[in-house]
Length: 217
Image (cartoon, rainbow, N blue to C red; front, side):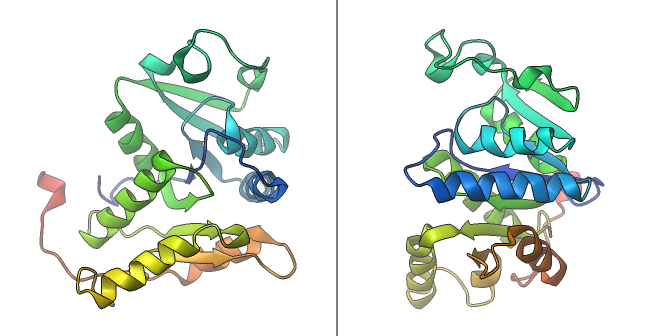
């Protein structure tokens, strides 16, 4: 993946669970509305589960466009592959939802990245963290120069911030590269859309320069 692909989407990484705090759902809804209000396509991992589904549904209800990328193995088998959905879902009835089926998790992540001009991570688990750190690593390697931000709602990403600080002090992450991932704290006025888009506007690639020719990879 390189920046040669022009995309109007913003990629959302978030949990397939809803989380234990109402504020997680609230910020997910706010971001879905903020993106759709600016005519930006929400790009996510497909389906209607957890915070992923909250972002997608809030954007769709606001007449926004949503693209879901889902591996074939996860299509039509319900929650956790058990064959039955835990709740009835009508998300597929929205006309502005475009579902793209791919063959693997690797293809899923690449397809999401190619359709996006920025990346946002909400609270989530192993998958969310893996996706967030992968696109941050891609930024470090100069594969892309797109903004990568983590929504630090209620201090959720404080441990990750502490890890980065520790890794810098230990000599495993350079000070310049420490700023490749931007953390956004809860805004005083609650306007997540404004602080996110301010972060996008102000984002400048700060990583070490690499001379890898990814266009020929």
